[in-house]
Image (cartoon, rainbow, N blue to C red; front, side, top):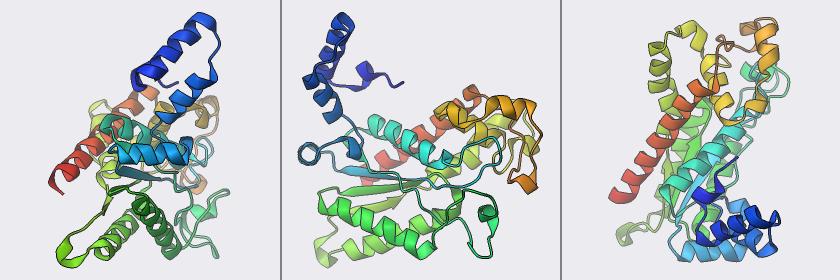
Length: 283
């Protein structure tokens, strides 16, 4: 559960105090708490307009996906992680709003099925359709006054698509000699850090490359346990059969823990915040 007292301004803090004393939360307190959210979907249109007018002109577009991760990790892992981490990044940055998670992404050929599409539950759309969704979302955010739109993708398969869209938008938004009123950014570091420094941190703790895995292994399960543990079937994973490549798994998640996952989550959040701050300072 998020620490509301830490994240909310004074008015919601007072409401929380009232809650602790009376065990009843007034509607005015609920409204104050909602209006301080960094999540676009939790704000009213007028609340969002006011936030933009007061400097909240950076928007994060989190990108997830629906794909199989073997028998022990739920299909929506990327959507859940992208949304939770985008919220944390926005809260650390300040003046940042998080758009809804983009859940439909390219996952491979549908017929005949390839890659993750060979396993039940995976949903795939064509790369061109995916890029069009990102373009439309970013253009909508720009129209409402956002000036820095940041794509963060939780899955490795569409990182190049993010770059394509950002480059296309920046060309379109350039006004020649008059400069550029908004920019799109593809934050590849958000994903890349999980494939580099996080892996190195796990290896330093004695885990093998085969155990850490490429998909649904220890690294993947640990990140999920650190964000939404209910999406990992921990008991079944420990006591059930050991899945392999035929089951859509490359790695061994049985020794994964939330504590290991927190290492990766911290790296993702801190790396992303630092990169966005650098962009905003030097754009």
